[in-house]
Image (cartoon, rainbow, N blue to C red; front, side, top):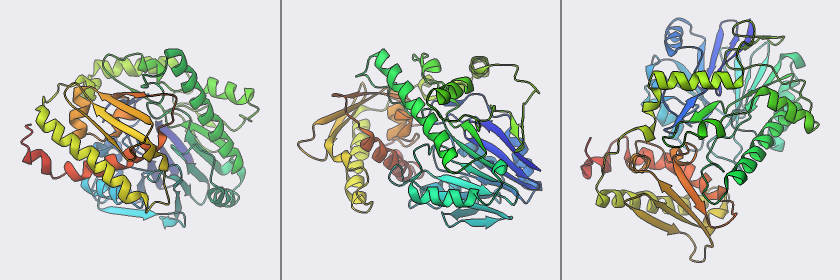
Length: 453
């Protein structure tokens, strides 16, 4: 059997006879505090829980530790001896997170590859873009799949070379490249210094760039087929329901039209949406035919989440804990002062990773507290993050990762001009996990400060 089933977002089920490989599981838990998958995962986790007990060749592969690829609740429900493969990152954070989920059988791998049940897995980290994300190749005896997830940027030279060589070992028809084709953070939609028209223009430009770059990467390695995925999710933010439309991914019709207009061959793009399967010959539709369109599946998913009250699990639909300003100020000092120390300490050991962070003055504030830090006294770029109370409380107490405010659209950002603050975002993304691991697992500061339930 040769089969790839698109489950949802960046999750796929890859089958080669008894080898059943699940990538980046995500079921019900809101990612980044606000995201829900559009549409929901086509398989309930109970099937995988049972499969893990009965099939020794069932394997889970996780590309990185972002919430929409790493569902803690899902993984915590799996048998503890389930085999989970994870790229070997410099940071121990993703592995520790798996261990906290109770997973005991963890196999880490890098670009040199590892064999498991006759399948070779390789991971490639684009360190000039992010040090906590990876493109993964899964090579069975019958076919190879590139699970690129969020890595849509042009392939680094060395990665391109390896992928070309590995893909060339197979007939072209037995190769599949899967990659992100939609925005995965709040830029530009949460930026207050842009007009609605400017936001729409910038968002379209970003999405178009991702789509074109992803498909070009597939052509570069001579892939026989391309799956447009990773980005099939929507943030549910109370009072900002316009995001249900503004942050929704593009349709396959849009993808194909864009590629044609930009002289990029679209012949490898699969007519495949969540629920469909590909056997390296043809796409099998979930119901035999595609009875619903792009908008109808979104509307149905939103209606379902409202009816079953899944949106109530999203942060902005919850009540605040009403932390005392003194406690919030203390925790805010811990977060931002810790961030400043983290950057200074790690920068020298990361080959000057995103040095632009030193040129930015950073402010966090909500209705109760406000704090500003800067690395250089003459920093001219000012970036202010304004939070609603619930997200700020949960970030500071470690219940949520910092990414919920940016990737999860749970803050508003103002920059004093048309400046790129990507360097600050990259560093905050890394630090958010460090802070959360320090403060939340043992509730050290939470208990000390008597923050309540």
